Every structure is written in structure tokens, then in C-alpha cells.
Length: 460
Length: 73
Image (cartoon, rainbow over all chains, first blue to last red; front, top):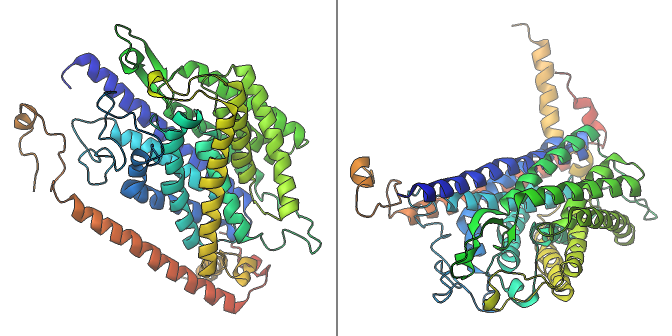
């Protein structure tokens, strides 16, 4: 970079994304605390390690192929034409099989003096991937093998959410063009897909021993440490704030980008390169958090676990349209989504004997789906893209409902169910019954007890 | 092998090469090693986990036996 202003813009953007990555790390800290707080004492350490180990597993696979999938699959392939052509001037290496940007052997997948953005953008998306895998992790605690979870974490974190991001989040995505899909802060792209995937796994994995009575009545296995759960969810809120910023492009001149001759318009944009402001989404974020907390508190009769989860469900519900909603619309939409998610959780639990240990399917999956559907009605008629002349459908309810089915069902539930079936068939999915009863940490605790006795009886 | 031996020469070139990491051109080798290590990790840890759990399952501790092992330190 030889121009001072260009350098300032680029380095600001680089630093902006770097900050979001650090903030989003708190999501994972929060998920770890939340899961350990929700698990029973005899499973604590394995629960923690299961969620921790998804960090390296998803990171290396995200480097190997996850990031490549995002840039390779926006058009399907072969579902809709790409706008990344020479005529649009948007070519990045283009089309299926793209591209030099994300190939793990590419020179820009490292320190590169001519590129300041790819690495931080890669990392921001990676943190989204951890979140997708971590959502699944919470639902299945205390009975899945760490080996099986590692496979499932890679599948959701580096493959399936990435495909849906390419389809419904990439500015060249076919779902924008054909369906008018709009999901600015990932109600569906991360939350519905991960919730659906978790449900698919749970359907095969089965409940924890003791969760249901012989007559099928569900029993509450409450969080062992509500304070840890509380702090965990506060950290998730904080990280989610960073996530909102990470879904924006901080500064962009849309005039030349949209091919408007002589027009200059600098703004922040959402992931689709359509205008929004960081200031505005700060309001929608806070009002949707509030709507979720209010609704969660009311519907659960003041239960702390569901009140905190309600705050998260509220944000997730409103996220699809929070780049454009009025804050009061966010508040109402969040409240509706939280109410439905709570009711759905208990209905599914009773009806299908699904043991979702932390309510992840409800908070992320059902709330995400509700958010997509509502967005289709409230933002009906808005353009799904700024590239107007290039054949993008407007946002509409039908497209958003189809989009919700794709996110929750096609790329979430179905792959989760199939993979869990394969792992189950190989005898690798669930821990032995005796181990579940004894506790995953039994050997560790026994060794610690032995050490304690040896140290206590030592005289030198 | 160093890709850059003089920053002055490197940055004053007509076209500055972006990539500065060592052994440019051998990325395929590092990728292959990394993929093999990743796959090995799954096999090794998965096998170890299954063996440990089978061993514990054979001991059949009761659901409350872990309480005897809660330490005070």
C-alpha cells in the first residue's frame, strides 16, 4: 500500500475484524462455562474437554477445506449463475472450484504483504464455525463419545454450516437470487442449521439415563451450577455483540460497487453488501435481547435458566432482519420467538422423548426458524442484494420459509441424523451404559482421590 | 531457506512479493503432513477412549460411587 488513505481504510478494516474475533472468543468461553454448569459433577471434565477440543478440530479442518467450501459453493454449484464475472467486475477467481483466496496452499492463506483481510475474515468465519459446533455440543452432553462429537463438530462446523453460508450468506449465493433469502445476523445460517443438526443427532443418540420415567414423563435434570450457567450466558451475549460487528463490512463505498456512475456513498454494510449502520444494529441487538429476556422471564415464570436462554433466543429470532428492523420491531419479534421456542422445547420433549440437555435446539433451532419466517413477512419487498440489475429476488415470505426448511432440515437435521446413524451403527456414538451411570470422569476422580491419599499419608 | 534476505531490496522491488514465509512452493508438503496428523489424531484418541471406557464398564461402578472419590484439595 502506497496511498495513505487506502492504507488507513485497509488497516482499520483489518483491525476491526481482529477485534471482533477476540470478542467472539467469549462465545466459546461462555459455551464451556454454560455446558459445565449444566452437566452433573461426575461428567464435568469430559464435558469441558469435549467442547474445548472442537476448537482445534474445527480450526484445522476450516483451514483445510471449510473456508474453501464457502467460496466455492455460492452458486450451488449449478443452481444459479454467478455474478462474479468479468462483466460485473466482481471476479475473485470465480465460479465453482473457486478460488485462490481460500485454497489452503494459496499464498494469501498466510502472512502476505499484499493482503491484510483474508486472514481476519477467515478467522471471523472460523469463530462462527466454532459456535455452530458448540451449539450441538451442549444438547448432547453426558452420553456421547468425544470421538463421535469430534466427527459431528467437523461436519457441522466445517462442512454443513459452510455450505449454507455459501448459499444464503455469500453476496453471490443462489438463495438470495432465487429465493430472496435474507439473514443478516444468521438466524438460520448458524442457529437454525446447528439446532436442526443437534435435533437430528439427539433423535439417534437418545436421552440420558433417568431423563424419562417408565411412563414417559420427563424429569428435570437441572443445571448443577446455575451461577456458572448465568456467567456463561452473559459471555455468550457479549460475544454475540462481537459477532454482529463481524457480520458487517465496516466501511464501503457503495457507489462504484453498485455501478452508479459519479455516486459516492460510504457506509457500513451487512454481509450482503447492503447498507446498514453499526449504530442502528446496536439498538436492535439490545432491544431484541430485552424482548427475549422479558418473554423468557414471563413464559418460564421467572426461571433463571430459561430467562437467560430467552435473552439469547430473542436475539437469534430477530437476527435475520436486525440490519433493517426498527428497535421496537426487534423487541416484539424477539419476544414472539422466545415464547415459541420455549413452548416447542417442552412439546418436543414430551411428544418425541428428545432430551436436549441445555435447550439448544429450542434456543437456536426453533427461534432461528421463527426468525426467518417473520423476517420474510416484515421485510417483504426489500431487495435481497444491492446488485439490482443482476437478477436477485426481493425478500418474500415463501422464499424465507423455503430457506428455513433448507437451513433447519436439509442442511441441519438430515445430515445430523444420517451421521449419527452411521456412528451408531459403528458402535461409536454413545458411551457404554455403565460409564454413563458411573460418570465420565470416574477414572480421573479415582486417580485424584488416590493421589490425595498418598500425599496426605506421605511424611517426606 | 529464507524467502527474504533483505527487506530493503524486497520492499523496493517494482512488484513487491506478498508471500514471505519460508520454503515457498512446498505448501503441499506441509498440508499433507497436517492432514495425516489430523487423521491419526482421530484414530489414536478414538481408540484410546473406547479402551478406557470398556475397562471402566467392566468394573461397573454404581451411580453414586464417584462420591467416594471427591477430593478435598
